[in-house]
Image (cartoon, rainbow, N blue to C red):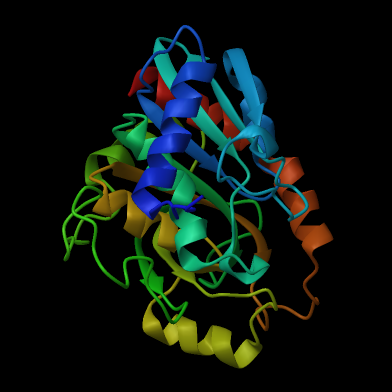
Amino acid sequence: MTHQVQTYWQRCQETVSFLKKTVQPWHKPDLAIVLGSGLGNFGARIENPHIIPYSEIPHFHAATVKGHAGNLIFGKIGSKQVVCQQGRYHYYEGHTIGETIFPIRVLAGLGAPNLLVANAAGGINPDFKVGDIMVIEDHINFQGTNPLMGPNDARFGPRFPDMTYAYDPEFRKQIHASARACEMSLRDGVYISVTGPSYETPAEIRCFRTLGADAVGMSTVNEVIAANHCGLKVLGLSCIANAAAGMDAQKLTHEDVARVITEMSYRFEELVLHWVVNS
């Protein structure tokens, strides 16, 4: 018997078909949400949830990073149909760059026109405080690669997608309006993405500050590039969980990052909830 190797597009379509058949009654999502370290509790805000572990989804992998539950959650927030990725894949876990963005292409294939990406980040801007929430206005890809490298499949998007408005300006205005309604203040800034998994050195942080970065992390940028390639409008939020290396005398640990995110998660959830319901 001849074994036929599936193409990347075919794998995406198989996953999309599985999810549409599994989630009944099926409703095309109005919004896709990707949650980072420690932010997965937002999934509890979804009404009438249909939770599918990654282990049950064709071509998905287990989430290996602490704080990433590894579920897709379908349901409603207010009048909006949503699908929430509770935990993401990182390049440093050993996934290929194509595997890290596979869920984004699946979410686009499900028909979601809009995407919210959230992460935990280290603050580079000296005016930022631990516990701040930063609206990502732009990013710097410092991962040394690009998820669109290789032959382009035009069914996903164009060969040379424009990234001028990688983070939708109207969404950024809306989230600030939601912050005012929730009596919160937000930061605006540039997010720089590195591969990790080691935290950055103080010299690297000084370099990134010179480049114009306000916060640093190990995710998000590849997903946002893929989302723009697929034509999705994106809102990005960074929860400032620690001061980046060299900004203070403290050493960095994932446990400290997770603790801070847990402490600020309620404010994050209230902000996002208001934006989803009122946008």
